[in-house]
Image (cartoon, rainbow, N blue to C red; front, top):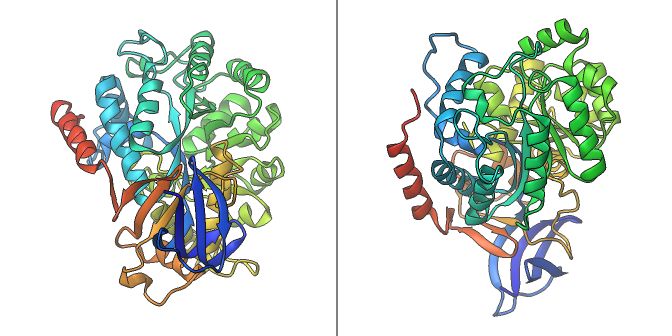
Length: 455
């Protein structure tokens, strides 16, 4: 597809009308503004940059709707985790491929064009490594390639069952549990030419002892100095309380004091944080990845947006548990949770960006790109042709222009507003549906029939 003509486009430089993009080898080679369409142009109405998904556990797509029954061991995150472990313990590579491919397809249809896969499911059942050890990482890579989404794979270390260093449970043995095996696995992933980006993950402070965490960080600093480093942190109040008992400090407080946190670091959730901790994260230019639908589903709590973003803090969004795969819903719930707790409106808006939707979109776009190790992405010449086209026949978008469109995407999104999604100059979805929708759905359905996750 040599040229694409859009009636309107949100470029890096801002909104422009009557725009022609010349696309070659997956990159935007030339942008012309205020031009007349040529007969050979492929025409769309309004285009936006695709949204990065900063945090995903693709395998949990098989749990959506299956973890909403009261659990005999409680009604909190920790009981939900038992259901998740039951699923993780039983998956084989073929099942994981079908599940992940469907999840990545649905991300594209919703307007995500890239994803950070926080990948800690490494071993066979019982803890025996696969051959090769990074087999399940290859499964995620294959799933992303099949669906056509850009992947940042975050292989993740998980060593202990709590701050006291307790041994892993039977289900947790599928996670890599030694420094040596983990670093070997990471090196194996990095040695492959997949076209995908590789980062490094620490599951959480409760799952990685302090000495091991320092070894991993040292490895990242010396061998992967430009790679993003992701960690779950301060998601649940119980986690904060246990960290204080173990270390005398809160999780984020401890991390800031013990490590040279910088812009490579991505702190997932950071739900229970003080104003001082948020200031420290902002000063170090680290990114917080928020997953509002998952955080609401698990009863995590509400992030303090107003104490972080207005002071320069950087955030992204993620689909996490896949209870919802919809960037617009994530941004809507992020804003609405703030409004409910503060009993005010327009929390994300500012004098510089008075439209709430546009303000949310911009902050999530910038932070998400950094989280995926793709900070230089954008709709500009020389950049990858990753974009979404809006369905302007949707009556919810009628009469709206520019930033009002983004407001409507986020706050009036009862139906999928995305008409088409392009990654690397190729349309992956068209008329709201992935090009291989029927194939991927059929594989997923067959997998669910053959492997029934525990209810």
